[in-house]
Amino acid sequence: MPRVSRREIFSETDVQVFHLISRCVRRNHLCGSDKRSGRDYSHRKQWIRHRLELLAGIFAVEILSYAVMDNHLHLVVRTRPDLAAGWSPDQLAARWWALFPQRRCSDGSPAEATSHELQKLVSSDTAIADKRRRLANISWFMKCLAEPIAKRANREDGLTGHFWEARFKALPLLDELAIAACMTYVDLNPVRASLANSPENSNFTSVQDRITDRQSAQTATSADVQDQQTEHGQQAGWLAPVALEPPRIRVRDRRTNRRASNRGCLPMTLDQYLSLVDWSGRQVRPGKSGRIPADLSPILQRLDCGHVFWVELVRNFRRRFRRAAGRPETLLTVKLRRPSTQQIQPPPKTRRPS
Image (cartoon, rainbow, N blue to C red):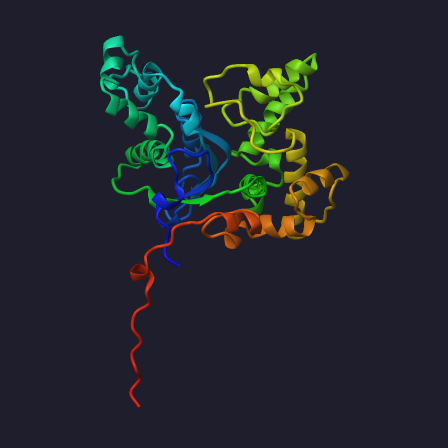
């Protein structure tokens, strides 16, 4: 099947959710222990995480889930062009300067811009519209993530050339079932790769960040403070919250510059999602037995998904979905423009000599 053009699945006006994958060149372990070179590049995972946290506070792109592996990167992101549409020219200029500063401090961080420098960045309606579009664009988000990491790694190795293999892959997630399954699939990547034996030990994953904040919040004296520290914690405060409807609405009213918004992504609480991830990991990992906890049944019923189908969905997520992910009835409502007949027409058959 021919690859679908990015223009056919990316919308500049609609809120969308995608599963993004970017691999190291030739699938070498350039972010882990590389057998070919005999070197350990695991410290680069922290580079990627820091860069993701920076971009989460600049772009109108929300990061729902991530996993930095030895030779590839998984992301679940949600575009928010509706937020970018409400940013003032001054806000656009400040965000653009943070991405591409024209002056830097001695430590390499962006220098403080003057009002004149910021005004030059949004001096015309065309410049404003262009920056508004780019700051909500997946391709620009991935460019600003991948390019600095590649340059830094090449400087470290004294090399030139590609660090990432080809372009990133993008799979649309069309409903809450697909989003929940993909987030679980991403968070369980280290477990499935035998790099960790539990979600809390899965380094450089969104699930570990959320668990760390939840554990830290348990020492708080009140439920309000616990919720604040859980949703705006040091580790996961830049990630999109899990619950669409939090137990306390006031935690969503708190303003933050670490992420585009405080909007949740799943019809379940953080504790329910962590239970779902843990249960799914027990089912997926060979040789480990497990059962559905009692508090998970309402979640699967709300997602309109039985437990047998859920295990199969998480186990074979990449194989099951090629063009888009969602329930069968959701997939039928989405019409992706197919390539023209001339592009997919098979070559003419030749007769075998008799």
